[in-house]
Length: 138
Image 1 (tube, rainbow, N blue to C red):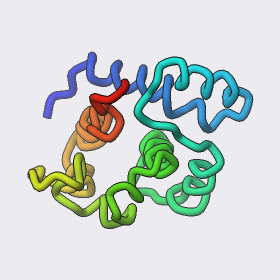
Image 2 (cartoon, rainbow, N blue to C red; image 1 turned 120 degrees about the vertical axis):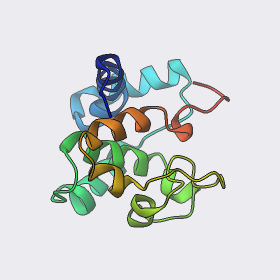
Image 3 (cartoon, rainbow, N blue to C red; image 1 turned 120 degrees about the horizontal axis):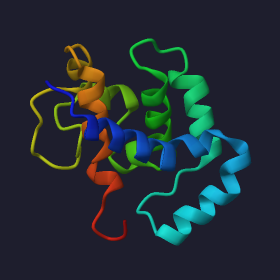
Image 4 (cartoon, one colour; image 1 turned 45 degrees about the vertical axis):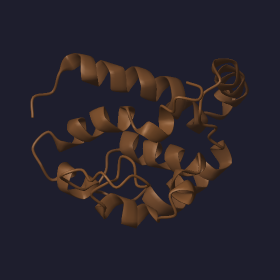
């Protein structure tokens, strides 16, 4: 798959705006004020993200650090609880973009990551995850 530069820029912009700040203690106050002002459909809890990152994904060599932090961000927003599945189950299901929907993607997250350019394809698709882009707010 050819990586479009704008896709990578969009991932970077979104990641730096919404994911990275929850891992920077000095940014927590301004971050929470920003997401409240923007009325995002998600509310990550930094202490949960940090705990998930340190205990679950920090040493997992299947993912780069951005993906590890993104997965921790999702966990802290309640994504896995809302969809009643574990992190490992999610990595292997074919409908990972919307686990409550019966429409099934062609590949699991782990299958995508094994392809050439898989990390970039996954990031492009994760950026638009329906859980984070609900119609009722953001």
